[in-house]
Each structure stands twice: as C-alpha cells, then as structure tokens.
Length: 79
Image (cartoon, one colour):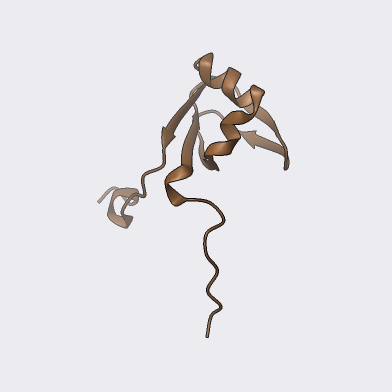
C-alpha cells in the first residue's frame, strides 16, 4: 500500500510562469539554474516570486505569471 504524504505547500500556491519574450531565459533559483525557453511554461511555487530576478522579469513583461489551473486531458490534446 502506498505511503500517504501530505503536500508541503498548498496546491493553490502554484504559479504558471510563461516566457513571453523572444529570448531564452536562464533563471538563477535557490535550487540551482533553470532554463526557460521562449514560449515555454513551467509551474513554480508562489515563493519563487520572492526571487528578485523572477520578479524583475515579470515586471518587465518578459514572464507572464498566472495562478496554475489544472487543465483537463482533453484540453491538452486539443480535442
């Protein structure tokens, strides 16, 4: 039987971060370097916005930051 492990964060604190600039971005996070290619998205915890680099890129309009909304399987397949 699988061991139940509770979330270490609230699922409502997940952000969808999208690179809307015309360049690839190398983010320097506390956990290490993370490459975010142009047009790509990733999910981060809300605490990532405490990073001055991510906040500056978001305010400059290079990153679009939205609350994460789980998409249905059918939406992802474009059916």
